Image 1 (cartoon, rainbow, N blue to C red):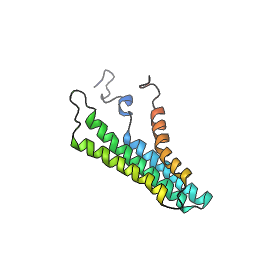
Image 2: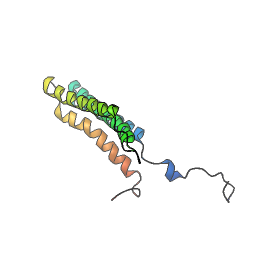
Image 3: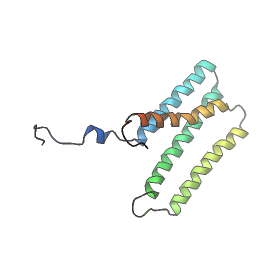
Length: 137
């Protein structure tokens, strides 16, 4: 208990750090809104599918690489093992497969794909702006 009689707990600033889950949810929300916009405004199912798949690939890669970086970039003794190399290889293969699909599948809307990948970037920017006084350069 503190001097004023209230229970001590984590300060609000400690509980409001960077959240990978929040970034992924925001990116998914932006992708959903974008896909609905494509369907309603442009009446284009291929564009909505392009945006959704691009956003999903970006979110999956982000989540996977976040876990990989937590494992590899540990203070003291980093763990750069076979699992880490295979994870990087799988993520690059997924990314390359997504771009190969852009070239093979007819009807892909390249602008929607760019918007889909951008949803993660926007979500990261929003998460970074939540606490402007932390970090920086």
